[in-house]
Image (cartoon, rainbow, N blue to C red):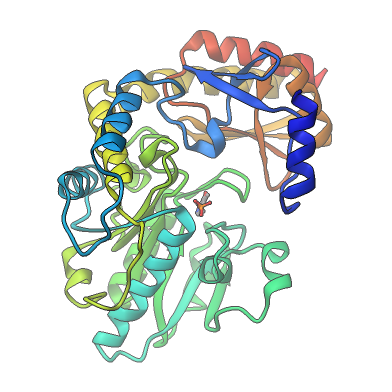
Length: 393
Ligand SMILES: *Cc1c(COP(=O)(O)O)cnc(C)c1O
């Protein structure tokens, strides 16, 4: 049964993922269950998406109700949730104007277009982007163009011209690339795919200053590190360094496909206007119902407060691995976005974690990435560490 389903997928889907040989059936809390009923403790959250975990009845009910009521209208009309979702997301992200997309890549794409339009409106002649090495911004052409990873770029070249790559956490390397053609600097405050690399306070402040001094826009891609994961609603708030444009997705819909890019009013005044950008599905009633309910639950349940309670325990238990196991050399990250550098091949470790009933993902630099649902408790951390130790032994 299960094998025939995997086989049907293998024979019909384009092979662009190295899938694990398991077929998932349902989830509850921080656990997923495959079609044979085997339980997996999930420290991947579908790539940092399922912040509220699985089977949240309040969220499911809100989505079911919305499905029955209305789930598509087109953006020519308002609907009940579009204002409410935008207002909530602006409030928690500190931005002023939102555009809803269907994914993180589209959010980045829109952010880049918004920055180009800002320069165009002001006739500044600026069009270049400075991005970071080891960054990841998605798979669309614009997003790939600012992704600092050759393997993701080379097969698709030539990409968008005018992108330069600086060294993350190295202000001088950024300054060396700034010119009167620079329109925006894009970065993840905490790089995910690139190996769980946290920006320093100095770097964030320095980027902000370079932008302010040179009429350059600062774009933060918080598709992965946003929405409570680092212990503030959005990672920029932890630095107190506010971007001009913010890209979001992943956890804002807890798995319903929705992303957004947002900007300050100052940028919006000179940026995208009617006819410049659009999306048939972006911000549809179902996506907005998801965002609205997810934020409501985050605020009522103080999910961010919970992250700050449980994250130090995860850090402590991971630090113990660094101290006690030769094959674990470093822990890095912030909040519930953590990584450990290991010296054994990750593919092998992954085979063993799957056997142990634990889901983790990798990141660049032989890093095991931990991005669990934000609702994990200390007991889940303990269970994860036990399983991981066996997989590493
Ligand atoms: C996942 C991710 C993206 C792309 O999001 P998609 O929804 O897969 O298009 C962009 N930026 C960052 C930082 C991400 O982690």
